[in-house]
Length: 138
Image 1 (cartoon, rainbow, N blue to C red):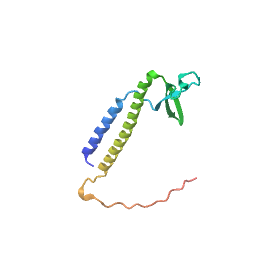
Image 2: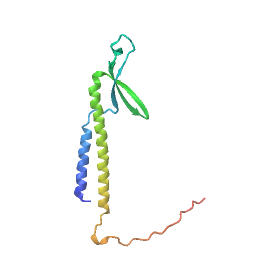
Image 3: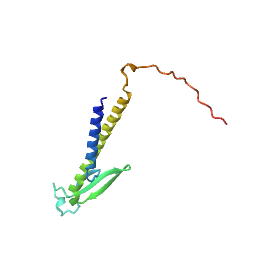
Image 4: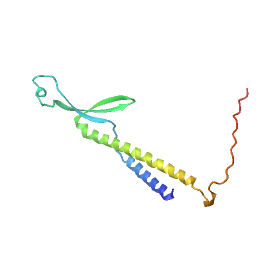
């Protein structure tokens, strides 16, 4: 692979790292607004077609195999949505960074395997002999 390709991949990796460094607060999970009915027959929520009280906002995400739920105040919903979006950007950038890094590793391997002299392909190789393992003494 050409040296220019490695250089381009290194520049791309640096760009991704810069975008990761510029991320704001991160928060994984899903934000859900729920409506509920209080059960009082005289309340507006008991009327047909009324959505009920709410929304009550909650953020859920898995930690160590368990789902955690946290109530989010209505005043913090917009901020929480931005944090969730930043987390999604982080995940996408992380995936892209790994892909570029892998490509860099492969390109460097290809450079190392490239023959130095054009006429030296498939040169003579020393034959290998199989040796039995030594048995430990004692």
